[in-house]
Length: 181
Image (cartoon, rainbow, N blue to C red; front, side, top):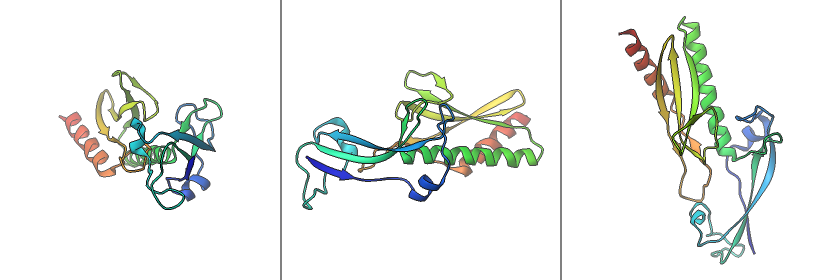
């Protein structure tokens, strides 16, 4: 059987950062994940079958090895790219919130995950999420900003959120302007 090893995500951030589970708050460990993928299956489009052991195409089922974050408490497995992108979004939200508190504006920012059934939760895996919303709360008013959840079709399987700090700030300033009316 063909085997392929790969890793996505910044290895320095993975190794030296402290990562916590977004569901339960437990410190995450790394674990080697193993998956056998048939090249004719639906999920095969997210794997690279082009580089075989002899430099040619891989034929038949292939075994892919990569490391993932693992939560020992809730047994949640999260891809490096997914966890790092969510942590980046959370850091951006905390920075925006601190900056506004220093300016004397009371605002509360919260992430809500929309699942495929239309419900909203404080966390669900991005593979099961339909989208992510940032909720801005000013006193009694609240506003939302959608954060795109993406997945590339070329040999990168993980889901990730695209953090656009300027879009978050403009949505926040628009919400504040509407709140002032």
